[in-house]
Image (cartoon, rainbow over all chains, first blue to last red; front, top):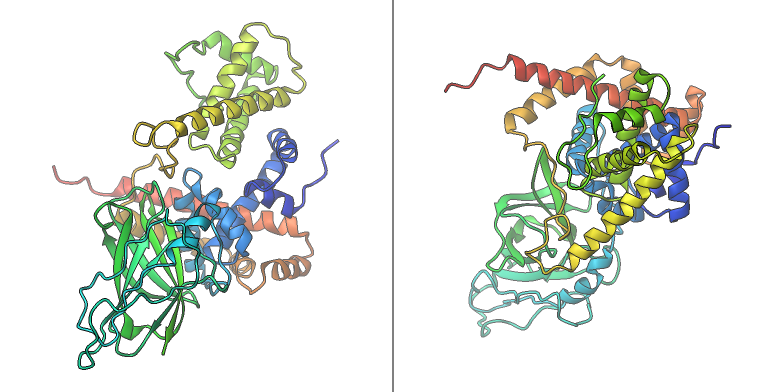
Length: 272
Length: 214
């Protein structure tokens, strides 16, 4: 007798590796024996790639997808193909959801670096472009929303501020109190982001894209090299072109068939 | 049909022609059908290993068959009526061994471990696509989507569009008078058709491409 059809949730949980081992084994045995069961799994897998490409996965599944299917051999290429397919089909991406995932690996580090370092020149002498303290993932500091660092230069009422810096770690919670915030005034011309790169991520160059809360890419820069030491990567954003709101800096690197995501860094920009 | 050529020079045991034939014998009395089953199970095992998070799923699928063939060749008695369970059991053992090997390798100081064990992102075996490749594939995608029936395109658009996947897909399945699973499979097969069309179109493009000057 044919085994009962598994429901979609179970298949998704199998693929996203959140199913109990005993059930995984049972399901695999069915799929090996039964072509129809295997095809149902493939169909759900393909749905997950397309749903992710469209930005339509709930937060939990999105996080699980990023640590499972996306990392399977050919996963990045499949994602690119899914994006191209949906784009050519005329399906629009969903606006990015408010809440974002928290990588378990990164929680600790995330908690940390927010503490960061924002070198903030209010009325000071124009600052050199790299004022942020280097983020230290090992720093045991709790993570309040970003608090501006003290002025890095003596105050001078005659010179407008120009650069604000912010150090970020990937995978922080969006829409919660722990989201890093950056307060700027209209006098700020440039925002320097110091991104803490995930450990063991190799890559000589990275592409960066800044997405608004609606998912629109508002700024992009390709081929950026990590800073000396390889633990961070520094970017300068044009502050004058960025309205107040939530953003996500997405870091990618070249991969066969396109690019593969490395990390993303959400933050909230507030104007005083 | 094309079968995997038994690997030669394996460290401790080599899959011989005789062992391979014994393996096929396990999969059925008709050699042709057994060979098809072998290919099908191998393809599935490869996916299963990938879904379990291994960066070398094809190798592990082959290792599974090598071990099963060895057992059969050694004369180990197994129920031919359900070779799937046996093969799956072996695959799970292989997975466990690989997982332990990876765990050991992870303990090796960084720089000495191989890239997979060190947690590097798995790299695709195929070479990176050039800009021309990408452009060609996009053109092919347009052509292949254009070749779909309008109804099929609309189905895909509605399947992937909408603000709520679950509710919208359920409603679409209701309109079509089919189950949600049947709708998912229909969309999957349509996408697979387009994908295959793109692959063939891109290959044709490469074949007709003028040779690069020496």
